Length: 449
Image (cartoon, rainbow, N blue to C red; front, side, top):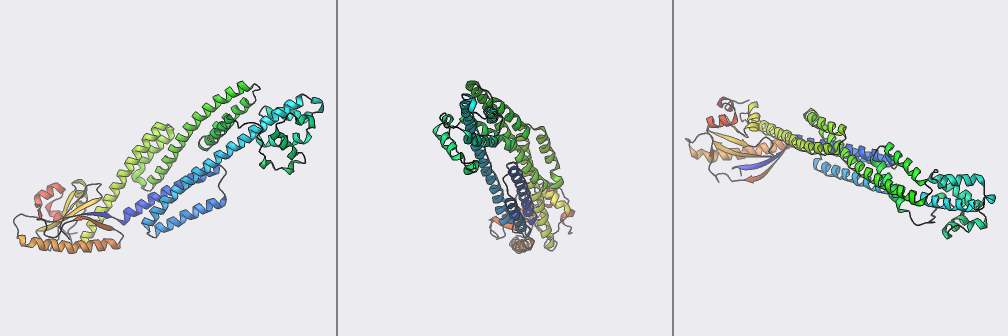
Protein backbone atom coordinates (compact mmCIF):
# COMPACT_ATOMS: atom_id res chain seq x y z
CA UNK A 1 0.00 0.00 0.00
CA UNK A 2 1.56 3.25 -1.04
CA UNK A 3 -1.38 5.48 -1.48
CA UNK A 4 -1.68 8.33 1.06
CA UNK A 5 -0.46 7.25 4.49
CA UNK A 6 0.31 8.51 7.98
CA UNK A 7 3.60 7.30 9.41
CA UNK A 8 5.34 7.69 12.73
CA UNK A 9 9.09 8.12 12.50
CA UNK A 10 11.33 7.44 15.49
CA UNK A 11 14.98 8.11 14.79
CA UNK A 12 17.89 6.49 16.56
CA UNK A 13 18.97 9.94 17.68
CA UNK A 14 15.60 10.50 19.31
CA UNK A 15 15.87 7.21 21.19
CA UNK A 16 19.40 8.04 22.31
CA UNK A 17 18.22 11.45 23.53
CA UNK A 18 15.37 9.85 25.50
CA UNK A 19 17.76 7.37 27.08
CA UNK A 20 20.25 10.09 28.03
CA UNK A 21 17.48 11.96 29.83
CA UNK A 22 16.47 8.83 31.75
CA UNK A 23 20.11 8.03 32.58
CA UNK A 24 20.62 11.56 33.90
CA UNK A 25 17.50 11.22 36.03
CA UNK A 26 18.72 7.86 37.34
CA UNK A 27 22.10 9.35 38.31
CA UNK A 28 20.39 12.17 40.18
CA UNK A 29 17.98 9.78 41.91
CA UNK A 30 20.99 7.70 43.00
CA UNK A 31 22.74 10.82 44.32
CA UNK A 32 19.65 11.82 46.31
CA UNK A 33 19.36 8.27 47.69
CA UNK A 34 23.00 8.25 48.77
CA UNK A 35 22.84 11.69 50.36
CA UNK A 36 19.63 10.92 52.26
CA UNK A 37 20.91 7.55 53.46
CA UNK A 38 24.12 9.11 54.71
CA UNK A 39 22.10 11.58 56.79
CA UNK A 40 20.47 8.60 58.47
CA UNK A 41 23.83 6.76 58.73
CA UNK A 42 22.08 3.79 57.15
CA UNK A 43 23.73 2.72 53.91
CA UNK A 44 26.46 0.16 54.18
CA UNK A 45 29.31 0.10 51.71
CA UNK A 46 27.76 -3.01 50.22
CA UNK A 47 24.42 -1.24 49.67
CA UNK A 48 26.12 1.57 47.79
CA UNK A 49 28.26 -0.77 45.71
CA UNK A 50 25.19 -2.79 44.69
CA UNK A 51 23.28 0.35 43.69
CA UNK A 52 26.22 1.62 41.63
CA UNK A 53 26.67 -1.79 39.99
CA UNK A 54 23.00 -1.82 38.94
CA UNK A 55 23.38 1.67 37.51
CA UNK A 56 26.44 0.65 35.48
CA UNK A 57 24.69 -2.47 34.18
CA UNK A 58 21.83 -0.30 32.96
CA UNK A 59 24.16 2.09 31.18
CA UNK A 60 25.82 -0.87 29.44
CA UNK A 61 22.37 -1.94 28.26
CA UNK A 62 21.79 1.54 26.83
CA UNK A 63 25.22 1.71 25.15
CA UNK A 64 24.49 -1.60 23.42
CA UNK A 65 21.35 -0.09 21.84
CA UNK A 66 18.87 -2.02 24.00
CA UNK A 67 16.81 1.14 24.24
CA UNK A 68 13.42 -0.28 25.22
CA UNK A 69 14.88 -2.63 27.83
CA UNK A 70 17.02 0.17 29.24
CA UNK A 71 14.14 2.65 29.50
CA UNK A 72 11.96 0.14 31.30
CA UNK A 73 14.67 -1.06 33.68
CA UNK A 74 16.07 2.41 34.41
CA UNK A 75 12.66 3.85 35.23
CA UNK A 76 12.08 0.82 37.44
CA UNK A 77 15.38 1.46 39.23
CA UNK A 78 14.42 5.09 39.89
CA UNK A 79 11.12 3.91 41.38
CA UNK A 80 12.99 1.35 43.49
CA UNK A 81 15.41 3.96 44.86
CA UNK A 82 12.52 6.23 45.76
CA UNK A 83 10.53 3.47 47.49
CA UNK A 84 13.64 2.14 49.25
CA UNK A 85 14.41 5.61 50.56
CA UNK A 86 10.84 5.99 51.81
CA UNK A 87 11.15 2.67 53.65
CA UNK A 88 14.48 3.61 55.18
CA UNK A 89 13.13 6.97 56.33
CA UNK A 90 10.11 5.31 57.94
CA UNK A 91 12.40 2.85 59.76
CA UNK A 92 14.60 5.75 60.86
CA UNK A 93 11.65 7.67 62.31
CA UNK A 94 10.33 4.55 64.07
CA UNK A 95 13.74 3.89 65.61
CA UNK A 96 13.99 7.46 66.86
CA UNK A 97 10.51 7.20 68.37
CA UNK A 98 11.45 3.97 70.18
CA UNK A 99 14.63 5.53 71.46
CA UNK A 100 12.72 8.58 72.72
CA UNK A 101 10.16 6.35 74.43
CA UNK A 102 12.93 4.45 76.14
CA UNK A 103 14.60 7.70 77.16
CA UNK A 104 11.36 9.08 78.59
CA UNK A 105 10.81 5.84 80.49
CA UNK A 106 14.32 6.17 81.90
CA UNK A 107 13.63 9.76 82.97
CA UNK A 108 10.45 8.66 84.74
CA UNK A 109 12.36 5.94 86.55
CA UNK A 110 15.13 8.41 87.46
CA UNK A 111 12.57 10.77 88.99
CA UNK A 112 11.06 7.89 90.96
CA UNK A 113 14.47 6.87 92.30
CA UNK A 114 15.35 10.47 93.11
CA UNK A 115 12.17 10.80 95.14
CA UNK A 116 13.02 7.64 97.07
CA UNK A 117 16.56 8.79 97.80
CA UNK A 118 15.40 12.22 98.95
CA UNK A 119 13.39 10.53 101.68
CA UNK A 120 16.47 8.65 102.91
CA UNK A 121 19.53 10.72 102.09
CA UNK A 122 21.53 9.08 104.84
CA UNK A 123 21.69 5.85 102.85
CA UNK A 124 22.07 7.56 99.49
CA UNK A 125 25.22 7.68 97.45
CA UNK A 126 25.54 11.46 96.97
CA UNK A 127 27.32 11.02 93.67
CA UNK A 128 24.41 8.98 92.30
CA UNK A 129 21.96 11.35 93.93
CA UNK A 130 23.44 14.34 92.05
CA UNK A 131 23.53 12.37 88.82
CA UNK A 132 19.86 11.47 89.23
CA UNK A 133 19.02 15.14 89.70
CA UNK A 134 20.71 15.86 86.38
CA UNK A 135 18.86 13.00 84.73
CA UNK A 136 15.50 14.06 86.13
CA UNK A 137 16.01 17.57 84.79
CA UNK A 138 16.63 16.21 81.29
CA UNK A 139 20.33 17.08 81.15
CA UNK A 140 21.54 13.54 80.40
CA UNK A 141 21.21 11.66 77.16
CA UNK A 142 19.49 8.31 76.79
CA UNK A 143 22.65 6.22 77.05
CA UNK A 144 23.84 8.18 80.09
CA UNK A 145 20.47 7.67 81.80
CA UNK A 146 20.55 3.93 81.05
CA UNK A 147 24.01 3.58 82.56
CA UNK A 148 23.07 5.64 85.61
CA UNK A 149 19.96 3.56 86.25
CA UNK A 150 22.01 0.38 86.12
CA UNK A 151 24.32 1.76 88.81
CA UNK A 152 21.41 2.97 90.92
CA UNK A 153 19.58 -0.37 90.82
CA UNK A 154 22.70 -2.14 92.03
CA UNK A 155 22.90 0.12 95.09
CA UNK A 156 19.20 0.07 96.09
CA UNK A 157 18.31 -1.17 99.57
CA UNK A 158 15.19 -3.37 100.05
CA UNK A 159 13.37 -0.42 101.62
CA UNK A 160 14.13 1.85 98.67
CA UNK A 161 12.92 -0.75 96.19
CA UNK A 162 9.38 -0.49 97.60
CA UNK A 163 8.84 2.85 95.81
CA UNK A 164 9.37 1.21 92.43
CA UNK A 165 6.63 -0.17 90.22
CA UNK A 166 6.54 -3.96 89.71
CA UNK A 167 8.12 -3.52 86.28
CA UNK A 168 10.89 -1.31 87.70
CA UNK A 169 11.58 -3.80 90.51
CA UNK A 170 11.84 -6.58 87.94
CA UNK A 171 14.35 -4.50 86.01
CA UNK A 172 16.28 -3.78 89.20
CA UNK A 173 16.48 -7.49 90.07
CA UNK A 174 17.84 -8.25 86.61
CA UNK A 175 20.51 -5.59 86.94
CA UNK A 176 21.68 -6.23 90.51
CA UNK A 177 24.13 -9.03 89.61
CA UNK A 178 25.94 -6.62 87.29
CA UNK A 179 25.43 -4.29 84.40
CA UNK A 180 26.57 -6.89 81.90
CA UNK A 181 23.92 -9.35 83.06
CA UNK A 182 21.25 -7.49 81.08
CA UNK A 183 22.48 -5.71 77.93
CA UNK A 184 21.27 -2.13 77.79
CA UNK A 185 19.95 -2.66 74.29
CA UNK A 186 17.37 -5.10 75.71
CA UNK A 187 15.94 -2.81 78.35
CA UNK A 188 12.20 -2.50 78.17
CA UNK A 189 11.06 -0.73 81.33
CA UNK A 190 7.36 0.17 80.96
CA UNK A 191 7.34 1.98 84.29
CA UNK A 192 4.75 4.37 82.91
CA UNK A 193 2.27 4.48 80.07
CA UNK A 194 3.80 5.43 76.71
CA UNK A 195 4.32 9.18 76.61
CA UNK A 196 2.48 10.32 73.48
CA UNK A 197 4.05 13.77 73.71
CA UNK A 198 7.57 12.39 73.67
CA UNK A 199 6.76 10.08 70.79
CA UNK A 200 5.21 12.90 68.74
CA UNK A 201 8.22 15.13 69.38
CA UNK A 202 10.67 12.35 68.55
CA UNK A 203 8.92 11.53 65.30
CA UNK A 204 8.69 15.19 64.35
CA UNK A 205 12.37 15.85 65.05
CA UNK A 206 13.40 12.69 63.20
CA UNK A 207 11.50 13.72 60.07
CA UNK A 208 12.77 17.26 60.44
CA UNK A 209 16.36 15.99 60.57
CA UNK A 210 15.82 14.31 57.18
CA UNK A 211 14.56 17.45 55.47
CA UNK A 212 15.84 20.54 57.30
CA UNK A 213 19.19 22.07 58.27
CA UNK A 214 20.80 20.50 61.34
CA UNK A 215 20.85 23.89 63.07
CA UNK A 216 17.04 23.97 63.15
CA UNK A 217 16.86 20.47 64.62
CA UNK A 218 19.44 21.38 67.25
CA UNK A 219 17.46 24.50 68.16
CA UNK A 220 14.35 22.43 68.80
CA UNK A 221 16.44 19.88 70.70
CA UNK A 222 17.73 22.58 73.04
CA UNK A 223 14.20 23.80 73.67
CA UNK A 224 13.07 20.23 74.31
CA UNK A 225 15.79 19.72 76.94
CA UNK A 226 14.72 22.95 78.60
CA UNK A 227 11.05 21.88 78.66
CA UNK A 228 11.91 18.48 80.13
CA UNK A 229 13.69 20.19 83.01
CA UNK A 230 10.55 22.01 84.21
CA UNK A 231 9.66 20.47 87.63
CA UNK A 232 5.93 21.16 87.47
CA UNK A 233 4.20 18.47 85.41
CA UNK A 234 1.41 20.74 84.17
CA UNK A 235 3.76 23.50 83.06
CA UNK A 236 6.10 20.96 81.47
CA UNK A 237 3.28 19.41 79.46
CA UNK A 238 2.04 22.83 78.29
CA UNK A 239 5.52 23.67 77.06
CA UNK A 240 5.82 20.31 75.33
CA UNK A 241 2.40 20.71 73.64
CA UNK A 242 3.47 24.08 72.27
CA UNK A 243 6.72 22.57 71.04
CA UNK A 244 4.84 19.76 69.28
CA UNK A 245 2.82 22.30 67.29
CA UNK A 246 5.91 24.25 66.25
CA UNK A 247 7.86 21.14 65.30
CA UNK A 248 4.96 19.82 63.22
CA UNK A 249 4.63 23.11 61.33
CA UNK A 250 8.38 23.19 60.70
CA UNK A 251 8.28 19.52 59.65
CA UNK A 252 5.56 20.07 57.05
CA UNK A 253 7.36 23.11 55.61
CA UNK A 254 10.63 21.19 55.45
CA UNK A 255 9.07 18.14 53.77
CA UNK A 256 7.43 20.31 51.13
CA UNK A 257 10.63 22.27 50.49
CA UNK A 258 12.77 19.11 50.40
CA UNK A 259 10.45 17.45 47.87
CA UNK A 260 10.55 20.54 45.65
CA UNK A 261 14.34 20.72 45.83
CA UNK A 262 14.61 17.02 44.90
CA UNK A 263 12.25 17.50 41.94
CA UNK A 264 14.23 20.53 40.78
CA UNK A 265 17.49 18.56 40.95
CA UNK A 266 15.94 15.69 38.97
CA UNK A 267 14.66 18.10 36.34
CA UNK A 268 18.02 19.88 36.18
CA UNK A 269 19.63 16.52 35.47
CA UNK A 270 17.27 15.97 32.55
CA UNK A 271 18.03 19.44 31.20
CA UNK A 272 21.77 18.72 31.23
CA UNK A 273 21.15 16.07 28.59
CA UNK A 274 20.12 18.86 26.18
CA UNK A 275 23.25 20.99 26.65
CA UNK A 276 23.14 24.63 25.57
CA UNK A 277 19.62 24.32 24.16
CA UNK A 278 18.29 24.13 27.71
CA UNK A 279 20.42 26.88 29.29
CA UNK A 280 17.49 29.29 29.61
CA UNK A 281 15.35 26.68 31.34
CA UNK A 282 18.18 25.79 33.71
CA UNK A 283 18.65 29.43 34.72
CA UNK A 284 14.96 29.72 35.58
CA UNK A 285 15.13 26.63 37.78
CA UNK A 286 18.30 27.77 39.52
CA UNK A 287 16.79 31.18 40.22
CA UNK A 288 13.76 29.56 41.84
CA UNK A 289 16.00 27.25 43.85
CA UNK A 290 18.04 30.20 45.08
CA UNK A 291 14.92 32.11 46.11
CA UNK A 292 13.90 29.19 48.37
CA UNK A 293 10.24 30.11 47.96
CA UNK A 294 7.94 27.06 47.62
CA UNK A 295 5.39 28.84 45.42
CA UNK A 296 8.12 30.13 43.13
CA UNK A 297 9.72 26.68 42.95
CA UNK A 298 6.41 25.02 42.07
CA UNK A 299 5.76 27.59 39.33
CA UNK A 300 9.30 27.14 37.95
CA UNK A 301 8.91 23.35 37.93
CA UNK A 302 5.66 23.58 35.98
CA UNK A 303 7.06 26.09 33.48
CA UNK A 304 10.29 24.14 33.00
CA UNK A 305 8.51 20.83 32.45
CA UNK A 306 6.37 22.50 29.80
CA UNK A 307 9.45 24.05 28.20
CA UNK A 308 11.38 20.79 28.30
CA UNK A 309 8.52 18.91 26.67
CA UNK A 310 8.40 21.47 23.86
CA UNK A 311 12.18 21.31 23.45
CA UNK A 312 12.12 17.52 23.23
CA UNK A 313 9.40 17.61 20.58
CA UNK A 314 11.21 20.27 18.55
CA UNK A 315 14.52 18.43 18.55
CA UNK A 316 12.90 15.10 17.74
CA UNK A 317 10.85 16.61 14.89
CA UNK A 318 13.93 18.33 13.47
CA UNK A 319 15.84 15.06 13.51
CA UNK A 320 12.94 13.24 11.86
CA UNK A 321 12.78 15.79 9.05
CA UNK A 322 16.53 15.60 8.54
CA UNK A 323 16.64 11.81 8.47
CA UNK A 324 13.67 11.41 6.10
CA UNK A 325 14.87 14.07 3.67
CA UNK A 326 18.38 12.62 3.63
CA UNK A 327 16.91 9.18 3.00
CA UNK A 328 14.91 10.52 0.07
CA UNK A 329 18.01 12.22 -1.31
CA UNK A 330 19.81 8.86 -1.32
CA UNK A 331 16.96 7.46 -3.41
CA UNK A 332 17.48 10.16 -6.04
CA UNK A 333 14.91 12.76 -4.97
CA UNK A 334 15.86 16.41 -5.35
CA UNK A 335 16.41 17.68 -1.80
CA UNK A 336 18.03 20.88 -0.58
CA UNK A 337 18.63 22.47 2.81
CA UNK A 338 15.73 24.88 2.45
CA UNK A 339 13.23 22.02 2.41
CA UNK A 340 13.78 21.17 6.08
CA UNK A 341 13.04 24.81 6.93
CA UNK A 342 9.99 24.82 4.67
CA UNK A 343 8.62 21.69 6.31
CA UNK A 344 9.13 23.32 9.71
CA UNK A 345 7.62 26.68 8.89
CA UNK A 346 4.90 25.84 6.39
CA UNK A 347 4.33 22.24 7.47
CA UNK A 348 4.61 20.99 3.89
CA UNK A 349 7.19 20.25 1.24
CA UNK A 350 7.18 18.41 -2.10
CA UNK A 351 10.19 16.48 -3.40
CA UNK A 352 10.64 15.26 -6.97
CA UNK A 353 12.70 12.77 -8.89
CA UNK A 354 14.29 14.35 -11.98
CA UNK A 355 13.79 11.11 -13.94
CA UNK A 356 10.00 11.16 -13.38
CA UNK A 357 8.71 14.68 -14.06
CA UNK A 358 5.17 15.83 -13.37
CA UNK A 359 4.87 14.03 -10.04
CA UNK A 360 6.30 14.40 -6.55
CA UNK A 361 6.03 13.20 -2.99
CA UNK A 362 4.32 15.53 -0.52
CA UNK A 363 5.41 15.49 3.13
CA UNK A 364 3.08 17.07 5.70
CA UNK A 365 4.02 17.61 9.33
CA UNK A 366 4.10 20.45 11.84
CA UNK A 367 7.16 21.78 13.64
CA UNK A 368 6.59 19.49 16.64
CA UNK A 369 4.54 16.75 14.98
CA UNK A 370 5.40 13.16 15.79
CA UNK A 371 3.81 11.99 12.55
CA UNK A 372 4.20 12.67 8.85
CA UNK A 373 1.63 12.37 6.10
CA UNK A 374 3.17 11.21 2.85
CA UNK A 375 1.50 10.83 -0.52
CA UNK A 376 2.16 10.94 -4.25
CA UNK A 377 0.95 14.18 -5.83
CA UNK A 378 0.55 15.41 -9.37
CA UNK A 379 2.21 18.73 -10.18
CA UNK A 380 -0.24 19.77 -12.87
CA UNK A 381 -3.92 19.22 -13.62
CA UNK A 382 -3.22 18.97 -17.34
CA UNK A 383 -1.40 15.64 -17.52
CA UNK A 384 -1.66 12.08 -18.75
CA UNK A 385 -3.65 10.54 -15.84
CA UNK A 386 -2.78 7.04 -16.99
CA UNK A 387 0.64 7.65 -15.43
CA UNK A 388 -0.88 8.27 -11.95
CA UNK A 389 -0.91 4.61 -10.98
CA UNK A 390 2.66 4.20 -12.20
CA UNK A 391 3.70 7.18 -10.04
CA UNK A 392 2.12 5.66 -6.94
CA UNK A 393 3.67 2.26 -7.64
CA UNK A 394 7.09 3.82 -8.04
CA UNK A 395 6.64 5.55 -4.68
CA UNK A 396 5.53 2.23 -3.17
CA UNK A 397 8.86 0.74 -4.18
CA UNK A 398 10.81 3.79 -3.00
CA UNK A 399 9.01 3.86 0.36
CA UNK A 400 9.92 0.22 0.97
CA UNK A 401 13.56 1.03 0.20
CA UNK A 402 13.45 4.16 2.39
CA UNK A 403 12.04 2.21 5.31
CA UNK A 404 14.66 -0.52 4.99
CA UNK A 405 17.55 1.91 4.52
CA UNK A 406 16.63 4.03 7.55
CA UNK A 407 16.04 0.88 9.56
CA UNK A 408 19.68 -0.13 9.20
CA UNK A 409 20.69 3.07 11.04
CA UNK A 410 18.17 2.56 13.83
CA UNK A 411 15.27 4.67 12.56
CA UNK A 412 11.85 3.03 12.78
CA UNK A 413 9.01 3.98 10.42
CA UNK A 414 5.62 2.71 11.54
CA UNK A 415 2.61 2.96 9.23
CA UNK A 416 -0.42 4.05 11.26
CA UNK A 417 -2.88 4.70 8.42
CA UNK A 418 -2.66 3.83 4.73
CA UNK A 419 -4.72 3.77 1.54
CA UNK A 420 -4.14 1.42 -1.37
CA UNK A 421 -2.66 2.50 -4.70
CA UNK A 422 -5.42 4.06 -6.82
CA UNK A 423 -7.91 4.14 -3.94
CA UNK A 424 -8.11 7.93 -3.98
CA UNK A 425 -7.38 10.36 -6.84
CA UNK A 426 -4.00 12.07 -6.75
CA UNK A 427 -3.89 15.45 -5.10
CA UNK A 428 -2.83 18.20 -7.48
CA UNK A 429 -0.13 20.61 -6.26
CA UNK A 430 0.67 23.40 -8.63
CA UNK A 431 4.35 24.30 -8.49
CA UNK A 432 3.70 28.00 -8.08
CA UNK A 433 1.22 27.42 -5.26
CA UNK A 434 3.58 25.01 -3.57
CA UNK A 435 6.49 27.44 -3.84
CA UNK A 436 4.53 30.14 -2.05
CA UNK A 437 3.34 27.80 0.71
CA UNK A 438 6.69 26.16 1.27
CA UNK A 439 8.72 29.32 1.03
CA UNK A 440 11.13 27.92 -1.56
CA UNK A 441 11.39 28.58 -5.28
CA UNK A 442 10.53 26.32 -8.16
CA UNK A 443 14.13 26.27 -9.11
CA UNK A 444 15.09 24.69 -5.79
CA UNK A 445 12.42 22.05 -6.18
CA UNK A 446 13.84 20.92 -9.47
CA UNK A 447 17.51 20.96 -8.46
CA UNK A 448 19.12 17.79 -7.09
CA UNK A 449 21.74 17.97 -4.37
